[in-house]
Image 1 (cartoon, rainbow, N blue to C red):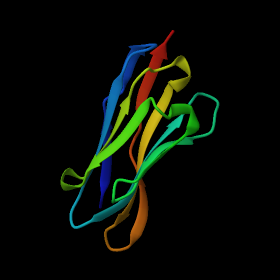
Image 2: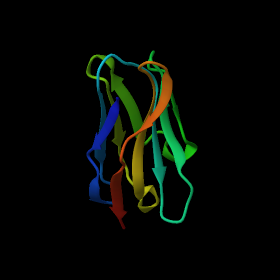
Image 3: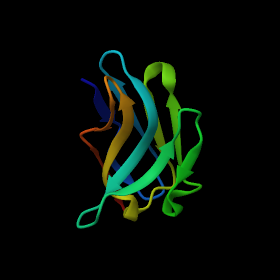
Length: 118
């Protein structure tokens, strides 16, 4: 069984920075695409950033030039560096990954709260 565990959320003032981490743990697995999603109160979950095995990245328009997704394959870890944070970035951030154990499956972390005060 594979688990994704996020860390790094918290409360920050507008204009500040946070770095989220997500580590996959388990035995005998291969990770393909890794994503960060977020869900604001009363809104649908949305894709924030994506990174492929070869480190090709895509971003939501709302976070381009402010957020950076990266991964360290040897550590089974994906990061989200968030700079110039805005109140509208507030929400629960979820790590998501497409992982092969005995078959390909989608895995989700438990979520980490990010709150940006104005």
